[in-house]
Image 1: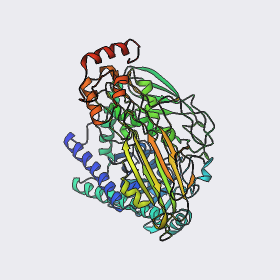
Image 2: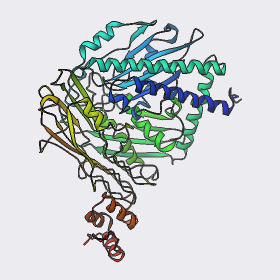
Image 3: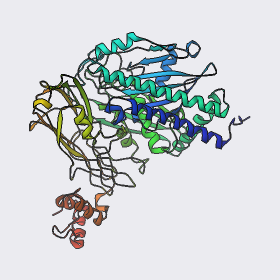
Image 4: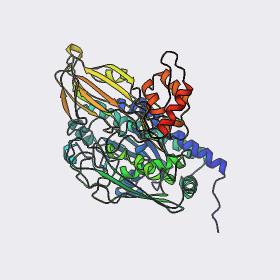
Length: 587
């Protein structure tokens, strides 16, 4: 006998939308009270709402993709150590344990119960990427977690509403910019309080004593929707294997093997055969691997349904313990996105033929580019620690060109240079699109960019050299894992770091003296489809906009354009495309 729904469809949708608005209001509160650009601008955080059993009901729409599959596990881990019946009103739980939470120490998770009429009705959870957690300056060179900073086990930051001042003092004593980190921790408390206030109002307005029945409806609908989309994919196992480009500070070759199996109801992703954990800070805990594995399926198959536990249940993720995708304590994990950000592309490679209209060309900023700078200002002796992020080109797809300088899969936002220059004593000399960097295709890859800045000197500069880390993607057109196009599209182009004009290795902590000049390039996205099928007028428009040069219009697309008038030579174009299609050069 089938179960009768407890709520009619309209009420379900109204409550569902209301839950999303609650977590998005919490995200707004977080951004408005946070101290650092990593939250206010970069959006490296998440806010989520759970029922009393720890099932995720809503996830903020402003967030990084990597938290999608992590958040439910974090809440379950909190409740495993503090069961619901032991929790008091005013308790707040904290951890940054990479194996229990989001994979590296600089992410702090805070969770709090939401009481209504004397009972726990749900939970709020907020995770934030903090600028610092002590240890070595952000670097891939750490060989174990003990080098990376302070690890916080599951503790009570507040107990019955009373602050545990020892935790605050311990944090303050171990980090470089305590006022900013502790300020962001307090902003997380604000976000959880906003969640609690919003949920209590909802319960009162709808006369609900709890969330369990609506939870069954909402999560069940999301799960059913994704299972229907998965069932439409032909059953079978689809494989891909990739040798990643050399990683700074890592002498080991890293290979990722994936087998994706659709069985009509769900999907299993198995990373058996992937490399073991390495002695560099790029290892991934299973939570991180699970999240960046689930994200592309949700994105490609069912993007319009809100995120909750139901969007994860049809996806099973397996990775051998001790591998780089399921590392063991005390493996170093700070730069885990050097691996996890590439998982969606690796899976798209496995699924390119069976899901041709749903995969993207490679992203030119994958894995993420980040710049960390730390030191003291000369004029007042105050410490600074800044983060900057710049994106490469988005990959082309079956429906459109890739966007310029848009990240995938991390879903973070650009930090304006004005904000960066306010946070650190640097001056940007340029930040500009890189022509010809987008992979050729029927739909072109988005352009990458070139960025240059220098460390200020004099009174506005630092008091001595700056500890600096520039972390780029390390993929180029001819490497072991280029920025791949799809279905005949060309690879994205562009990569490199120069310091004072000399080529330099990225991801390594180095001392940058006042006056040092730093320049780097981020690649364009991979193209989609045969470049010879791109309409010549679209290529001519690309040339007029400065996205594609005349030479590359001819060599990549077979389109001959008059340099003076910008008009396509139709006869010469037809002849050139015939030569290219036959395997000859453009002539």
